[in-house]
Image 1 (cartoon, helix red, strand yellow):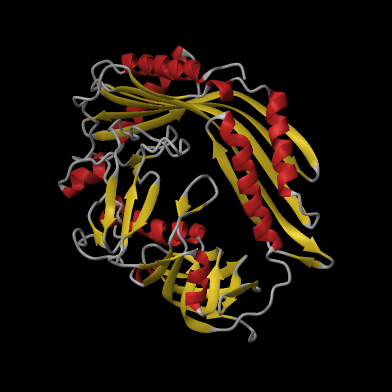
Image 2: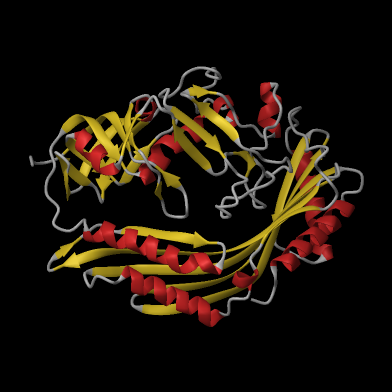
Length: 462
């Protein structure tokens, strides 16, 4: 790599200052994003090495007479940036006004030029030959069993930077570096081929790389090999055991979507009047933790508008305690922005949550995974879901993939089965949980959960 993250950061800030100066005394905000990456791709039993130079983009948002203009550009010359600022103000003159538009004002913590740095010198010094070696290690670990067929392996060393500058006096930047990888494939035995599955991980220093490659590829191997020789399940409606990846998709995804202030205002969430009301099982607490430096891929110290982020309990013991807002949605709600403006330099700010996690209190029955499987009795363990899940109505239906049938504690792979239910009912139907969290691809962690009320449909009996 030829450009260090410090240089990426400084280049974004220099370009943002040019745009700021071009605006004169008018309101403007410049969100910058830049990255440099070496990505190794292995597919069709061959390597392709793609090394990209640094790339950067500025999102220029202007306000004039309560009218919004926005232009996103990857042009870097002074003249092009000045022209982009003019285009943004031209767009603003044509857009409808709104009293809810404004830019973030600096607070006591907004010291001039405040920056957040999470770089590792060992990672930054990795030569391309070592990155290829790590890719080969991923492949070796994934293919320890000869029945495994790899479709694609990717490994990337990423260095990136984000900046936020506005005419109110905010100037923020961050930079970080990490190595990430993933493998996707299947198992094949005689004429039998399993469904695709995938796994991967992230490392923030060189000491983490080897053990995390071994752990993530071990999960991948176990998943695809254990899917061989599937049997038929049976149809029923009742409790199922859901894998941590599905906990993230169904539980955390539903709560994040419906605690979104903009979604509530737009009528796509039924939780508009639910603050301080019960929305989930009393055993459940869900929170965001954007300042968790153990997961640098989700680390975000300031939001898309320049407000500092923080840890928020979204749902606490089943009660909705927090609604996320950006400036616009907060103004519509008569509230304050919460540091939840999401998005990047390619779009105007949306609303979102960062690094969402869950905790389960002592009111819920928790067991080790072996005992949890036994307590299910007879039923389905769902690992992967492919289908439609609507966080607005709550309805979901689709296919359970890479899943298993449990019978009195014994487990065997099951053919694809149809499942359906309602996400809001599921939030209130958590029966039991594993006593420990399990890692999901990318470093997130969650427990296994038994939830009730899901319809399972199979073509034949066990």
